[in-house]
Length: 325
Image 1 (spheres, rainbow, N blue to C red):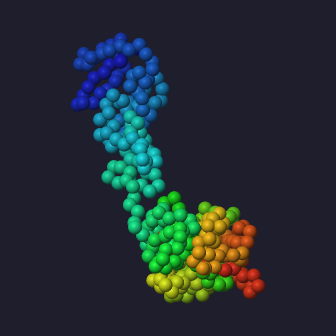
Image 2 (cartoon, rainbow, N blue to C red):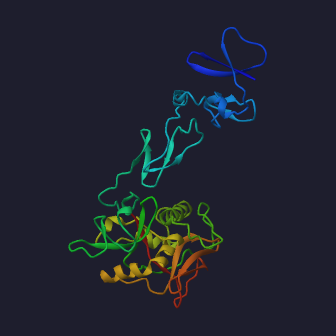
Image 3 (cartoon, helix red, strand yellow):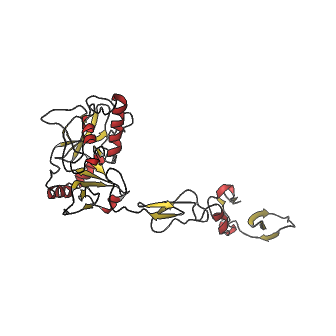
């Protein structure tokens, strides 16, 4: 076999020849059927610029021309601190962009660490929670600590921290016994879970969906059809009234985090002289179906489904909100 190579406008090509020759190019015979030896080393190329190996179905970029890949944006190796993986196809082992590890973001062609604010913004995710740990006390100024800090006002205890550095903290008090709703209606945009949704951490998203539905159905501020949600919406500690409307009914995933960290959470609640987790049954914001929602039995740590309109004074479900930070 004969392989003919030539250059045109800075691009290199490889052609096959048999017993004939082209006078305008230089020819070199290579006694091989190894695609890699002929320069076919990559599995994909940008914009259809690859060359098909004559001995198989592999397409390749010209491996000897590093700048060919860079010309089409394939210039990142996606390795090092803060990098997770490359995105899409490769050319000469380079990517057009990268995905970043938690706490980093793709910016100006590299994974840069996301700055952590000095304190949280109560009621929204800022990433500050990665500076805290579950069981820490959350204060009205948006900071947290493992121990009581003199001169600061505790408002909650951290019960969940996500991989994105966003957290949720449990109110220092329960709000009482209320129904999830007064009727059996499935909320159209609220996910239904037919098994215990320990991966549902969307406390505030769930709460907003229910309140938005109530608003559309019943008008301004008429959340009375959803008593548990009405209570968390109207809740705010007297020490920080501006948080009204920012508290949420915890989802099953967040309640499950309380199960796993109950001792540390109770210890912090005791240190600020507030009621601990106890042994009652708590409502979650996670829905099962039209008639039922998920509830948490604090005494055993297990989850069960309960009729949304369940209300018996001897054994009703309590409401205790969380706040994002």
